[in-house]
Length: 477
Image (cartoon, rainbow, N blue to C red; front, side, top):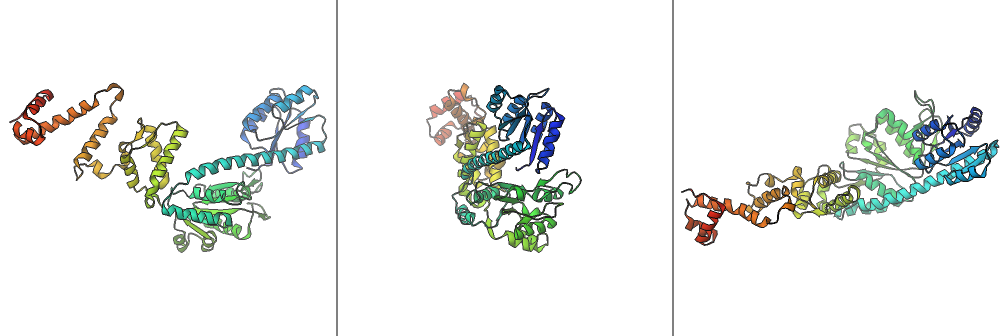
C-alpha cells in the first residue's frame, strides 16, 4: 500500500524539529520518536515510506534498531544520521542494511536528495516484491482454476477474449463457484499484470465505512479522520479493482460508483478536487441484479455499466465431471500445506462425492476434503470419511440394496476400527464371522435339518457338522 509516512528517531529535540519541519514541508507525514524503544513500537504499528534514525540513542542504538527494522520490514529504506564520522560506523551501518548514511551537521538539500532517492528505491523494491508475489499467485491460480467440463471451457473462452480488452466485467454465480478466481485470471492475462489487484467485499464492510474504503478521505473529513487516506480506487492505480457482492452496495454509493465508471475520477470524502484514476472494474454477485433493478434496489444505469461483458459461472452440480480433478487438487494442497499423507479417494468415495449436489459448490467441496483428510488416519479416503454425504441406500441398506453392498458397508465400518499392526490372520477372522451367522440362520430356516442346510450351502454334510462344532453353533429343532 502506498504511504507518505516517514519515521524520524533522534534523542535531540532540535534535530527532530528540523527534520519534521523540512519533511512536512515536502508533503510527508512525519512520526517522531525520542528513543529507540518508541521508534521500534511505531515501526511495528505503522506502514512507513522510509525511516531516518540517529545512530546513537540512550536505550537502543541506531545500529540495533536498524537490524530490527531490516528484519521486520526489509523493503523499508533506512537512512542513518550521526555526529560521528568514523569509518567503523559507516561500514557497520551499510552491512546491516542501511540505505544511506548522513553525518551531522547535514545540509537539508543533501537530506532531500537522500529522501527522494530512498523513496524511489523503496517504491521500486515494492514493485519488484509485488511482481514476485503476483507471479507466484499466477502460478497457483493456473492450478486452482480447474475444470475440463464443457461449461468451464466456455468460461475459459470468455476470459481469454475479455482479458486483453480492458472492459468492465460482471461475474455472476452461486456462492463458492470461484468468482474471485475468474477475476484474478482476467487480471493476470491482461495488460495490467504487474499492477495491483485489489478485492473488496461490499457485503462484509459496514455501509458507513465502505465509502471511505473505496474513495478515501481527507484529513478532518469526519471525527477521527486525523490524516488523509487514499481509497481502493487510488491504491489500485493502473490495476484491477474487484468489487465482490456488488448487489449489496448501498444505493447512495452506487451513484458514486457510476460516476467513477463514467468520468474515470474519484473525489475523496471531505475533498473538493476530482482525482483521475486508471482502474479496471470487475464486479461479482450471487444475486439476480435484474430482479433487484426491478425492485428498485439496484440502479439500472449502473447495472448496464457493469454488465458490459457478463460471465456466468456454473454451479458444481452442473459440471460433475470436474469433481475428481478438484478432489485430486485439494488433496495435493493438503499434502503440501498440512503435511497429510492422503493419497487419494477410493472409487466408492469418489462416486459419493460426484453424486452429491454441493449447494456450497467448490468451496464446500474443498472444506469437506480438508476436514476428511485431517481426521482420517488411512492413506485413502472412504465413504465413511464423509458421513454427511452418505447416500440414503447406505444409511438404510434394507431398502433395496444388494447383499454385497450391505456386507461391504458393514465390513468397511468394521475394518476402520481395527489395528492392523496386531492382526496377521484377518482372512480367517472375517470368514469365521461370516460363516457363523450364515450357518446359524440356515439351520433355523431348515428347522435343524443339517442335510438340507448342507445342500443349500453346497458343501458335504460332514464338513457342515465339523463347522458347527468348531464355531460353537447351537442347533435348535
